Length: 297
Ligand SMILES: C[S@@+](CC[C@H](N)C(=O)[O-])C[C@H]1O[C@@H](n2cnc3c(N)ncnc32)[C@H](O)[C@@H]1O
Image (cartoon, rainbow, N blue to C red):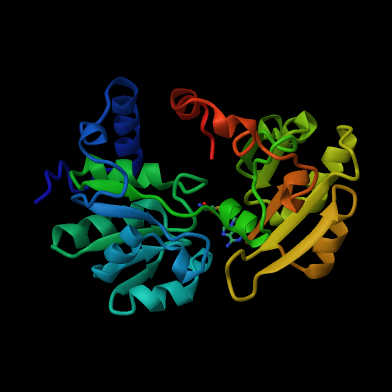
């Protein structure tokens, strides 16, 4: 039974209190459990990009045992829901605020039901999981995270490439374009692309690709920089649109996709221009202690 503090706890008050707590102390469970361990409470599970086979074993087990699954609507493939949780009550979280979602999950958990919160991809990337976890924890409902495959990784697998590639991309940026929830001064896409050796993975930006590319051109980006868009990576209707900073906006508009796409900017998306890595070259013959400290595969 949870140590519920107050039936009427407002999620905002709960979030403020938990945020303050995080600033001063680490939760003991951080040291007691590793990611992937079975834990007490409501799991916040990354469903992966869509394909049912890209769910983790831990995620699948929790879904199969669930009585109530609160999921991220159209971002979660219905094939995955029918494959693993046909037996459970399914609730779409889209359009529901925390004031509705938190009591829904709390009450079900306290009534002894197995509750799962299912996010798309990995909850750590643009998932807004922590605020829900904090609101539940504040009411005495334990929670934990189960990672998933983020859509940038699914897109990279579809494209048969890597996001980092020797001599081509030394860094990866997970980012989103300015819009309703991100101010223009916090949009750093032009800086990432300007660095030259970054694969920039654009989430939440399908509808804004043309504008984003215009801003990149204004900032002096090379118009020929490759841009690859993977719509619905790993879904049955997955689609790939290839272009450049100059051409991708028009191509995407013609395709008609306004959401659910991963936009990869940089040469690595094409697997182009890379050099053989040190790892399987002369470094392979160095001593064991050197190998351990330098291994990067
Ligand atoms: C709210 S964010 C959630 C991201 C998710 N947590 C993840 O790790 O992939 C939604 C954005 O993720 C991207 N996305 C999610 N699933 C996708 C998929 N299967 N293929 C391509 N992009 C996807 C899109 O850019 C979409 O706008």
